[in-house]
Image 1 (spheres, rainbow, N blue to C red):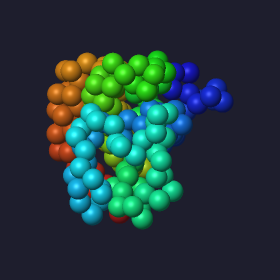
Image 2 (cartoon, rainbow, N blue to C red; image 1 turned 90 degrees about the vertical axis):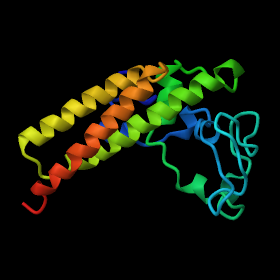
Image 3 (tube, helix red, strand yellow; image 1 turned 120 degrees about the vertical axis):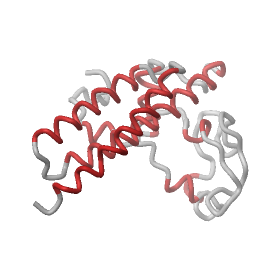
Image 4 (spheres, rainbow, N blue to C red; image 1 turned 30 degrees about the horizontal axis):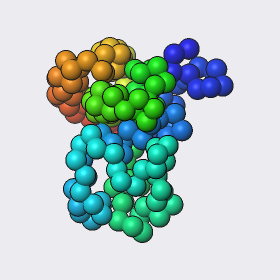
Length: 181
């Protein structure tokens, strides 16, 4: 199935939200800006490859990131958005082999990352003891987020995910009433 790992077995929603850097193209190291801080030892503009990337998209300082002032990299979790952009949105193509894809992939990744953060929140909410109507509402949000994910490379997708983010932020507090039951 689409999005299945190379083993060919079906992917659960929780598995889909786990990053797999081996199926990505270092998109988190390109798409996001870094501000020199306790979390990043350098400043980098969004859409610019991190200077610590090698020509193949690997991190030259990976095992020493924390020691060298890149705790933000250690803490980052794309929730599987990176590999989804590379494998699904761009069909396995990469900016590393096709530099013209750098901008479109960075933009799609930023959108997909927002989608996957929201999907991760909904997956956590789904583990609560919820009544059927709340679980159904989560399912509706997931369906709408998946539609945005399918269009992540389109500029309008960003606005759609922002709108959904607001709706989900308004919905999640309603689940408190079901805690402790």
